[in-house]
Length: 99
Image 1 (cartoon, rainbow, N blue to C red):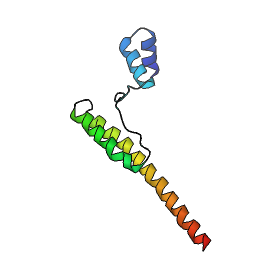
Image 2 (cartoon, rainbow, N blue to C red):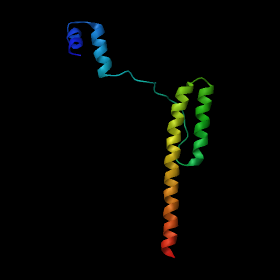
Image 3 (cartoon, rainbow, N blue to C red):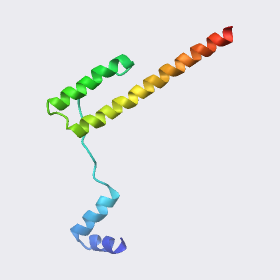
Image 4 (spheres, helix red, strand yellow):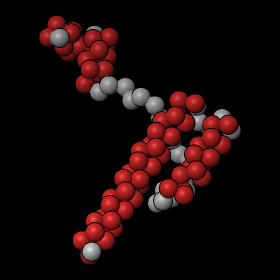
């Protein structure tokens, strides 16, 4: 690496490129802009997935991008379900304590 650095400092653009790729890796993917409904309840999730499918069908998202957006929606689904389960458990525990 020191030799590559020396070469870059001496003006070797290939060596400079190698160093820069190590320091600032290339960004993978691209920002995806699309309209999604608010994901506040599990009832909102099918609409969001339908929006992703429609964007992919229209050619605005690649299948890989659609899969990545779907993974974010899936993470939100898990978060909502966890929140829902926690509320249900708390309600059951409160009923049991009241007996």
